[in-house]
Length: 174
Image (cartoon, rainbow, N blue to C red; front, side, top):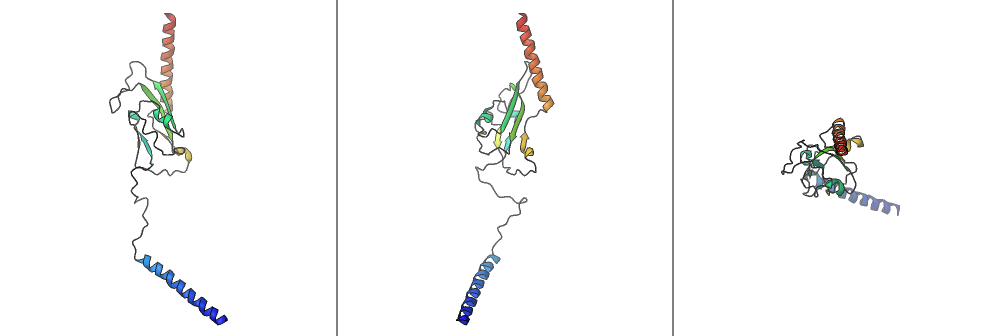
């Protein structure tokens, strides 16, 4: 019985080895499927969830994107322009009335649903082809799209408050 079991197990081992080698030989002549990422990137589907870009010159500060965001990752602060200040126009010809002093998106919170893109009346928010967010610190995922520094934003707020207090004094005098 011992010799029979030995021959049977040897035969099964030989058959198993031949099957394994045949699988290896099949793949030996196939084209490799590995891509050399980051030099070579796969083409993404048409409706993929990618990085969001903001064209801040077209933003009118309407807060529509901030309200539409389901995870509240967008923070916008605006300051009303003083009379006589010309803020310019958007690319579609709308006149701007608010300074957008803060426009931050926290991509660590963002679920890339694209719900902020659709309500924007000036189409200043777009999904891009970029999809990589490799950073070592989570705080680096907060993107600030505003043109103003913190000091400039505070100055705009102070100017508007000063203008408001001067208007109140004029009204109280009359």
